[in-house]
Amino acid sequence: MSIGAVVEPDGSLSEMEITPSTVMPTHRLSYHQADELLLSAEDNGAKLEIMALHNAAKRRSSYRDRNGAVSIDLPECNVHVTQLEGAEEEPIILVEPELTNSPSGSLVTEMMVMAGEVVGNFCNDNRIPVPYRCQADVVLPSQEDLANIPPGPCHEVAKRRRMTRSSTSTDAAGRHSGLGLEAYVQFTSPIRRYGDLLAHWQVKAFLRGSPCPYNAEELAGMLDSVQSQMQQVHKVDREIRNYWLSVYFQQRMGETWDATFLCWARQDVGMAQLLIESLGLEVVQRLDRPVSPGQMLRMQCTEVNLRQCTFKLEECKGTL
Image 1: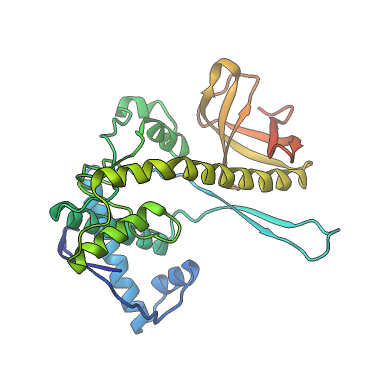
Image 2: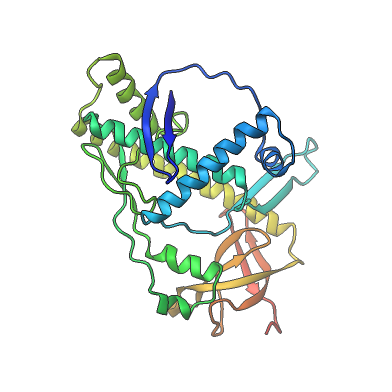
């Protein structure tokens, strides 16, 4: 499926189109290669094409910001594992923050969101039942409250704690406050998200002139039936990630890491939310003294349980 639209100078969309298609790739670029191309002085066809998309993405981002979109700028942790052939050799584990300021990453994000908006408007206009994603209005901290919080990650966490969970509607589109859109459908990942696949089936049937496979009630029932399975998939994903993080810390028991105190997760029991920026890793660990948002701590791993996929970080003695 291909989704097209004209991005107007103000970032709004016109001439929206959805059509079955066969796409023949002309360039194969990694995010790193695309970033280099965007920043290069080259003036070839590939540079012009990706720059046009980059400029459209910037207009789209500004448009959504004006419509109340909320962006959370926090690093995400990437865990890469290289399994060596010899059983006696330890795997090589690389833990690093995902690039958050990548121009090509922002480009892809905006194009995916744009596709979701086009599909959402198309399906809503044509009364096609699909899994519309909705989110209630976000009540962000006041400027006075934010003024008492150090800028940077602490600000972002304060905003994130006010975000409401998104929901799904199958009969009509609703506003997605976090994205700043009046209609949105996840459509770009039918291989890994079952809801996207259902949306493809519905849209393709409509384009063929056939009845949609499912009405709104049936679609809602199908989504409910797979929700527990998806929760289990996410649980397994977390456990796999935590297992390799535990191995990573076990291999580095003598090392220490700088961590920023973000906020109390549960102050009554001393559970603190910390960010190890060098790893892009947020953790909840116990602290036994008062600390303030933004305060830097020096942490070290003192305990690992690979069977339970857990690790324990403690503040180094003598840390100010």
